Image 1: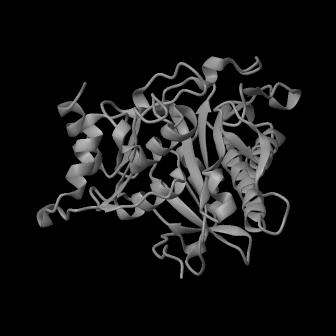
Image 2: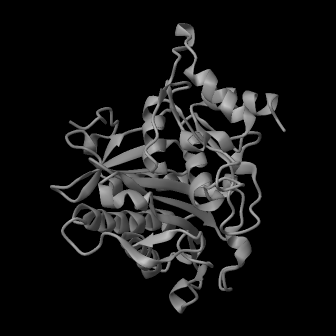
Image 3: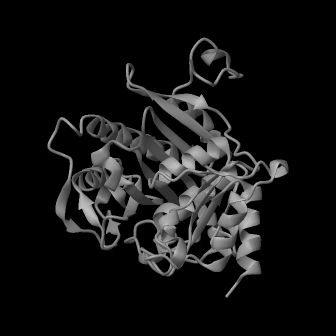
Length: 348
């Protein structure tokens, strides 16, 4: 049964709302966009359905395993990484709505400078397949995307500066989680809505309208295998989470999937905090500001949560490079605020 029941629109009262219908209806929120943003989101919708199809048949096709090379991050590329990257690039390039794209899988940004793209207003940053190392063992993975209005003049070639914008300038962001069901969740700065793919129809249907993240929760998500390398503030916060205190529903439950989209999605719906700090095997943190942290921070804030680097707001960070990494604390507002207290209390 679909969760969305209170649709105050007579046309849709007898059936669930599709993602396409919802996008078109919300065009009024963007009078300056003339429908381009809606079409851009539709391109992402199409690409995600194609990727979902391949993920669902991964065990039957020759698409599991690695391709034997590494991406710019120094990480082994899985076959599905390469496939998903190509699908999203082709889908976003096809309609002429995007003047450039930056992907976690590519060293540099891609400029779309054909005649079709000369008046394009948007750039897209994307992690085509987050958590892909889990694909061989059938664990949920995802796609994360972020959309900005370009800074350079239309008709000119896209520049690096078009991509190096602080997160608060995003016009839209979202993710797709490919799990027991496939969901697309996105925001355009007017709340967060989730759509579940109905495989019998091949369409995304509105299932989670106006998502609100609980102010607090009972779940903390962190790779505790790196505990000895964590900053002191993170160690103290973990101990706080593990202490018994019925008034605050502690001890909290530790839940860490290792797929950022999956961990974030669970915590957004149920309440919780996700942490990937500095001081691990990645001195500045493992997660990428532009492809992972900014889009999920935008969604978290729109749902009532918080996202910081342990000290300051993620969306205010001025990027300096495409593949910049930052420490990341995201989730329920009260839990992130408490973690920041410990970070400031035990600041080096």
